[in-house]
Image (cartoon, rainbow, N blue to C red):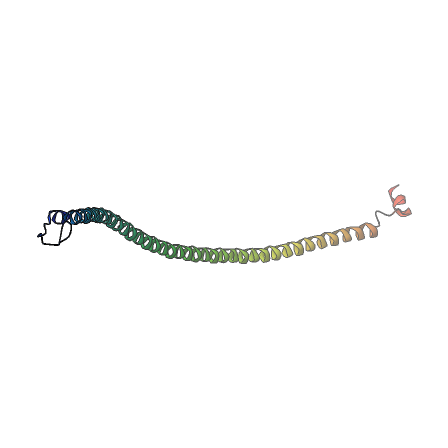
Length: 166
């Protein structure tokens, strides 16, 4: 590769009827200047390219990290959904079991209350029958007393009783 210094130091043989040496020197200096500018520009671009490659590498690492984070977040979200569904199913099963137990308890209580009601009803009917029998006995007794009083000759005013007692 030819460097700008090589261009500047290039010496050509002199020949008869050759190019004007000053013009050639000016042209070579211009080419060397342009080469220096291009080399400097290339070096700047290479430095910028290295910086951009480093930034790109950093961004790629960030992207990989973000992708991994997203995958992890999705996995955690999915696991949370599964866990929540399991918990909901367990809560529902427990609630159903509790409800069945309570229904069975209430049903047992209702059966017990129905039996108590029947027992109370039977006891009430027996009490009514006894009370009725007692009242009938009392009515019969009152009726017999009433008949006695009505049929009792002693309670009746008669002339014989007054005569005999005098």
